[in-house]
Image 1 (cartoon, helix red, strand yellow):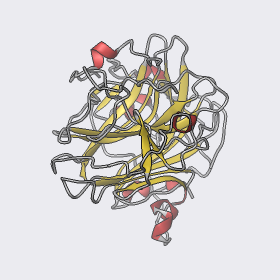
Image 2 (spheres, rainbow, N blue to C red):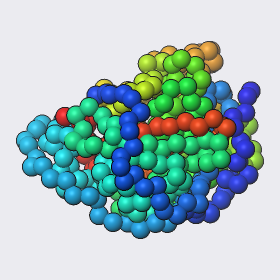
Image 3 (cartoon, rainbow, N blue to C red):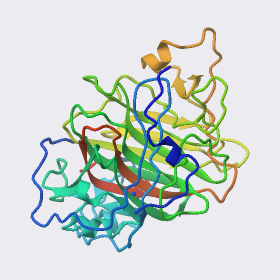
Image 4 (cartoon, helix red, strand yellow):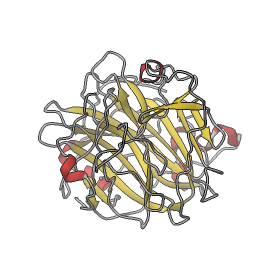
Length: 384
C-alpha cells in the first residue's frame, strides 16, 4: 500500500490553528489592476492521488473582512424550476440578488485585495490573480487564477456562511494540464460551532456533532493522460483506509463515485455542482441527500435508500462503479447495501462554510481557475 503525501501531516492533525482559506480554454491575461495584496499566512493542505492510501487535508486560512457581493444587475426571467435558478439570470447577471442565493462570487471586484476582503480567511494572495479568461456564457470578464506548489503549497479562500440544513454549490473550474494535484477543488460543509477558518482535522473521523465536509477534486490517475474526479468526504460514518483503524492517521476523505467517465477536462472550463442535505432523523440517514453534477448531467445521487454498493476500504463503490479501485478489489459474494449517509447526530451541526482551494505539495507549481461560484438553497444549474 502506497502512502499518500504526508509532509505536513503532523502540523495538520487535530490542529485548530487559524492562518491568514459550457467551455473555453487558454490561460487568459492578467487584468490591469490585478493587485495581489493582502495579508498572507499560508495554510497547508491535502492530497489527491489514485492509490488506496489516504489523502491528507489542508488546514486553514484565517481572518479578513467580509463585505457585500459586488453589484450586478439583470432582471430575472421566468424559467422552470427544474432547470435551476441560473436559467432566470442569463450570464448569472443578477443571480446574487435572488432570495435563494446564500453567496455568489464572480471575481469582478477589480483586484485580488478586494476579493480577499470579502472572505473570512484566505491564503497566499501572491498566488492569486484576476485574469481575462471566463467560461462560455459568463456575464463577467474575469476569473480567479490560483497558483500553488513550491514554496507556497496552499492558495485558497474561506467563507463562513449562515447555518443551513441544505445547500447547492455550483462553480466553474479549469485545471492546467500535467499538474501533480493534491487538493485542488471545492470544499464545503459545516463546523459546530461555526468557525471563520478551515479546520479539516486530517486523519480523524468526525463523531457526528462537530464537523462534516464534502469536496469534489482530482482524485485518481494523477499524472496520467486522463485524471478522474471524485468526492473527498468526511462524515461520521466514513470508512478508513486501514484494515484496522488506529491512531490519528486512520481516516482521510472518502471517494464515493469511482466512475471512469467522471474526468477532469484539462485546459477547459467545467461546470460542477454539488447538493448536500443533512439527515433530519438524528439517529439514521433518513432525509439525507447528496448529488453531484458535471455540466448539468447528474453524475451520482445518494439518499438513505441507495445506491446500493460495497466498500473497498475508504472507497464506497456503487454497484455500477467501473473504476479499477472498485472492480479490481470487489469482495466475492459481497452483500450490497446503501452507503449510510447519516451525516450528523446533532441538530447543531449544519452546513456553514465554503472553501475553494488549490493545495499542491510538489516543487512543481500548478494553476487552476475558478469563476461564477454560487451557493444557494435550491438547484443552480450551469450558465445559460
